Image 1 (cartoon, rainbow, N blue to C red):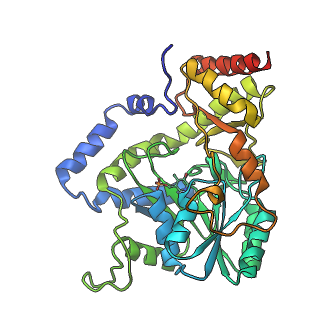
Image 2 (tube, helix red, strand yellow; image 1 turned 180 degrees about the vertical axis):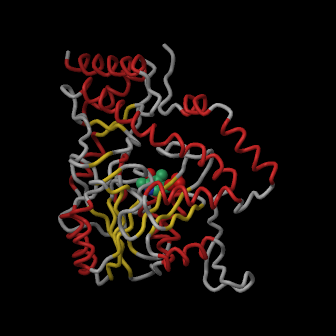
Length: 379
Ligand SMILES: *Cc1c(COP(=O)(O)O)cnc(C)c1O
């Protein structure tokens, strides 16, 4: 049987037709490969799209997070609280700057940062005589984190809130678009993310003009107003003009794709809801469905994946190990009370093919195979 793609970027490319090719060729010909006009144009459109005052494009989602922490002056002795159930970049950047990531648990239904565990992680940091300075909340699998619970904790404790919306850009939380939530937000344009380019890319969003200025300087080696007098330690964190040109074309169809993703998720919920735990989207939230992730008891997951593989259907496990259980991160502290939910989820989650171009016929094939796999196990 034919093998289905997990994410069908080819279908999106066919829809876009010659537009992307022409946009790329235009950059190749005008020659402003670094910080060309498309970069500024993209930043304006991104800011407008999500309702943030400033959008700063950059080289990747990881660099977006790192440059934000650099701008905040994060360093040794500081603690930054983040969920353990996330892609490694979230906590990696904290450790990279010599600060201490303190890992918190997640909620079992939305997979996002558990506000109670966040409080316990802050206590843990203080107990270790570290200085809690900020929180990185993650919009995991496309769903915004529980900001109404997280924001008051941050303001009570005097912590900044950084939203890692690498998977959730384009989603909304009670009428607010991701990118406009928190003190500052970071996203990724890695090709497989809901809004992706044809290589690495990312962006930073904030309403804080002074902070935006510092990040623009960091993105270009800490440049000041005099090009040859670098006023701070920075890096090369720029987005290529070609990638900006690709993103300008993709941003045009992104709202439409977000709608299409909802329909795909709804059809999965209908087809599988009575057999497995399907993903919950909290009241008032719109997910971008970076992943459609179901839960199965850990003893059933491997057989389920094998059955689907035989039927030509790829699955993926995000994430088989929470960060605090990975070799490089085991030495970092975790919230008081431990992280039982994310440890359990790591054994149970499995993601199905998800993209805006999953037509009904193909999706029925996936749903039928999943139902057959579950029935075969039960027999
Ligand atoms: C993908 C991702 C990143 C990193 O983005 P890159 O562009 O790959 O560097 C950071 N955080 C989360 C939650 C991600 O999913």
